[in-house]
Length: 421
Image (cartoon, rainbow, N blue to C red):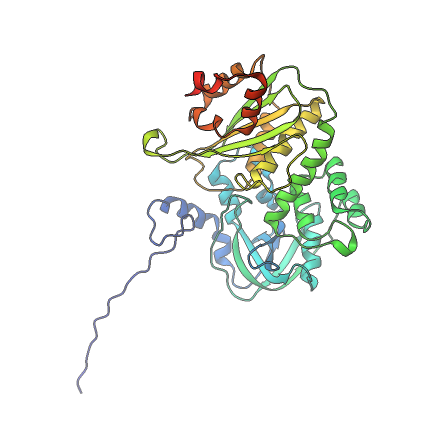
């Protein structure tokens, strides 16, 4: 009998990088190793596990037929709330890796729903999780073992490993804050009024986004599930408009105020101008070799809002526009003054992973709790801001409609040329 041997070449397939989505990536290998280590509990799961439900998450692709999940660690953990707590992350100055490691340890067991006609007990469970005072113990049953993955985008915090959900059950009584329960049970209260009522009662913005997303606010016949990304901007916009109404009744500031801070690769300079209300956000993403300025065409992106507001979505700066406005209007309401607001945001190369727009909200809030720099003129204010910028204000001012308005009003015709050319 003749035997024939076939020489087989075994090809090892390089894994896909969770950061850049390239196969065999070397640049992020060290980070991948950190994330895999953080996800160790997920690797041990087969199809069933007990975890502490943190927050619902509703996707936006293929709207209105979208995915809906509940983010949870792969074990019961009384500190699981820290995986979805932007206030804590900023307060403790978590770095990018610390935040990503916390989010990597979450699983996203999910189903497909139609947001206009959601059905099934999973919806009720997700709503309970959204309202819960603390993360409830939950039993999950999956259709198959999950494979490690994590999704990053500029709007919300990283989303953990997806998994197809078979069955879910909360295994303990869920405590819901009384004021929240009363508002949710009021089917005659408009969503806008419900959001602002709860905000004034001290409900955290992160929780407001959750309960709006799972369709718990508004007139009964008008309640809808909302993709998480949209609910983030909606909450910022609703509260911002309400605060804007109040700010426009106050007296004007008497001097120029400047606040500044940097956190996880985002540098902010916030200028308040003694005038009637206007608002503008100007931001610029810096390339890795931004010091070689001649090789790059740096473009700042800007969105502007006049005294009466704007009717169109802020397309250039997107959700950041509404987040920045909210933070600044909170400050003006605290000091009971009116003013024009200009935010410069430099996004540095050290911000190498997008973590969500929460970082702008909490960072600006943090900056606005510090002591301001005070100036008697626009030029003094901008000189100080320019001294801290990585890129000269020359690249910013030409994009600013707000500064163009002020220059015209005060006839500072030589302003940009003399100082920032």
